[in-house]
Picture 1 (cartoon, protein in one colour):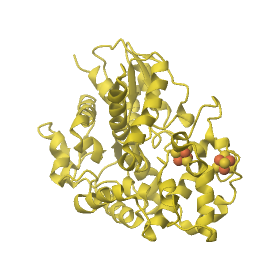
Picture 2: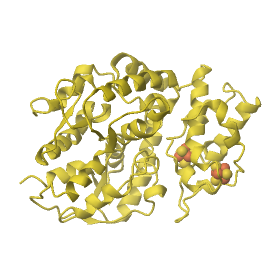
Picture 3: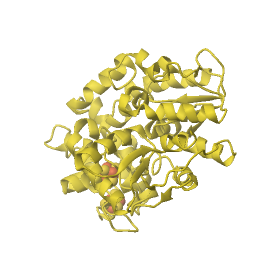
Picture 4: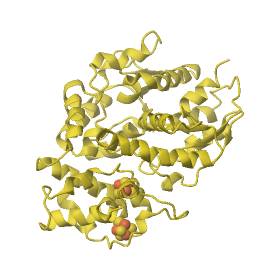
Length: 391
Ligand code: SF4
Ligand code: SF4
C-alpha cells in the first residue's frame, strides 16, 4: 500500500513502451482493461500518464474520462509482471493510490461502489446481510466457535463464501475436509469482520484502516497459530496489505497451501476417483499478487483419476477473470465478457472441469459459463478434493 505522495518517483519511469500489453512468453493479451477499451488511458501506460497529469496539475479528477479510466481496472497486476522497468512492482500500488486520492477529493469511488462501502460500514460485509447470516452455513456442522473456544487453526471463511448461498459448497467442503483430517479448527461465525479488501481496492482507505485495525486486534487476541482463507482476496489483504496497518501474529495460509500440507502429511485418504480432465485458473490475488502458484497445481496432480492440463497463460502470466478491483460491481457486463475470454482459453485445453480456488472468481466463472453456454463445469479446488474423500 503506497501513499499518493510517494508514487511520483515510480510514475515518471513509465516510458509508454507498451510491453505490458502482452504476456512475455505467449505474446497473448495481458490487460483486461486494454482488451475491453482498446484505448491508451485504460492500459498501464495510460494510468501512469493520468497519475503523472494529476501530480503535475495538468489533469484533474473532474476532467472527462479520468475517474472512469482509473476505476476500469481489476487491479490484476499483469502489467506488473510484463513491465521490464524498475517501477513494475508498484504499478498496482500506483492505481490504488490514485483511487485513494480520488476518494479523498470526493471524485471516487464510482456510484455503484457506494452501496458496497455502506454495507461494509453497516454490516461489516459487502453483501448487505446481517452479521448473523455469516454463521448460517455452519449450523449443525459441529464447528468450534473460536471466539469462545480454543483451536489451533482459524478458518477465516470470508464474506463471499459465507454469504453467497450458491457458494455454500466452498465452506462446507473446507470444513468437512478439515474435520476428516482431524484438524483442530474453528470459525468466528457472526463475529468475523470483512477483511476490507473491497474498501482498499476502490480507494476508501479510512474504512479499510478501521476494519483492518479491528481485525488485527481480534485475530491477535485469539489463541490460534494459523489462519486459513478460502478467498484469494482475504489472503492477499490479510497477508500482504495488513502489514502497512499492523502485524498479525498467526501465520496466514490460503486453504490450498494448508490442504497441500495435509496431503503431504498423509492426512487425506481418497475414497474414490474422478475421471475428468481439469484445468486451473490462478486467481490474481492468490497467484501473481500473493505468490501461491504450486500448491493448487500439486493438489490437482495428486487427485486420483484427474488429468491436469494447463492453459496458455498461467502462473504470473495468467489472464485475470475480470471480477476484482470493483470491476464486477461497476461493470458487470464487462466482467462477464472478460471471463468469457478466459473460459475460451480453458475450453482450448480440452478440459471439462475448470478449477480455481477463490469464491469471487467462482461467481464470475459461473456467470460466464452460463452466459456462454459452455460445457465446462466450474468447481472449487477444495470442493473437488473433498468430494473424493467421501464414499
Ligand atoms: S508500465 Fe512498463 S511496460 Fe507498460 S508502458 Fe510503462 S514502462 Fe512500458
Ligand atoms: S492491473 Fe490488469 S487491468 Fe489494470 S492496467 Fe494492469 S494489466 Fe491492465
